[in-house]
Image 1 (spheres, helix red, strand yellow):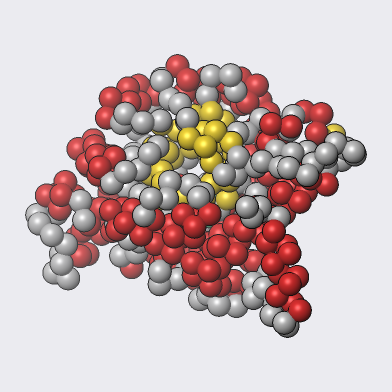
Image 2 (image 1 turned 180 degrees about the vertical axis):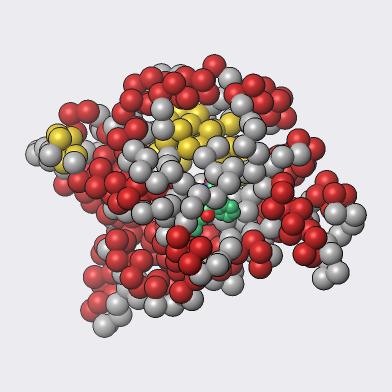
Length: 387
Ligand SMILES: Cc1cc2nc3c(=O)[nH]c(=O)nc-3n(C[C@H](O)[C@H](O)[C@H](O)COP(=O)(O)O)c2cc1C
Ligand SMILES: O=C(O)C(=O)c1ccccc1
């Protein structure tokens, strides 16, 4: 049985034949590597955040204010990274965050990501704004576990259609992203006047949808593409949604529902009261509310408020194995990783994503062992001290 840490041996052994890993193993260095292979606009879209990009920085700095206290002589020869989420055993507490428009990174886009995740048994979350229709990504993922992320559009009929398609295509949980009913003020994209959607990237789930097609008077062709894009702009987000709308969604999805973007414990309590199954403590990687609290700083209070009732997931700023340990110790069941795998995709398609995921899991496995821990179950408040 190979373990995540075996990836380290594999790399060193390949080095005996002068074969190097091909991609950076320090996942904080991927951004620099990806800059060289992407257009300035695509790179800016992915790397950029809202406003002054302070919250993106806060997300990373928050990890530095917690430090792991290693323990000794605890027999860590057998480790188990697996966790149970919604009754399913995940091989590691790591999911691939929903990232839209992946074809701006690599021609294989979401299909490559889905295959890389499936190869490791990790769950990948497909965005409503994917560059390939959800049915086609499901086919690429094969039997790999998959969740669907909903951008809840203005039309309930369209929302119902997207959700029904996702259920029919075998997506097992629904992640409803509530922090992005409109894009924030993003200077890198604004300065380049760049929006992938206006180039018809990330709209495939809509263009292939019967309800959307009815809105634009039939299938989308060259003749009505601009009108269809304007319809999309008008439909994409719904700023009028309230907690009361969740009952409607709850009736339409039989599996687990997770609200993404939670930062306040009262919102997490309301999620529980509305019959939701989980939350993702996330600030969208700093891409929405500039000046917002670091997501890691929001995590302990949310976990404290609802950890016994809801599955608490976390994202925004995960780059290393130690980051995963810190998020789990502060109350997350599992984490989602975003930009690192996007950069892996840009650098090497499916192989690049696989490299990033294997690196993260190997780093996690080794760091756990060296800290005297055998798995997520060993993690808790006494794993960490404040810096
Ligand atoms: C290029 C890009 C596209 C994204 N698209 C989506 C999306 O379609 N749906 C969504 O819920 N979140 C989206 N996100 C946010 C991620 O799901 C996640 O919250 C964030 O990237 C986590 O932070 P990290 O990049 O620091 O890991 C996107 C993020 C990036 C960088
Ligand atoms: O860019 C993003 O952060 C994002 O979430 C998004 C929103 C709409 C379409 C694609 C991605």
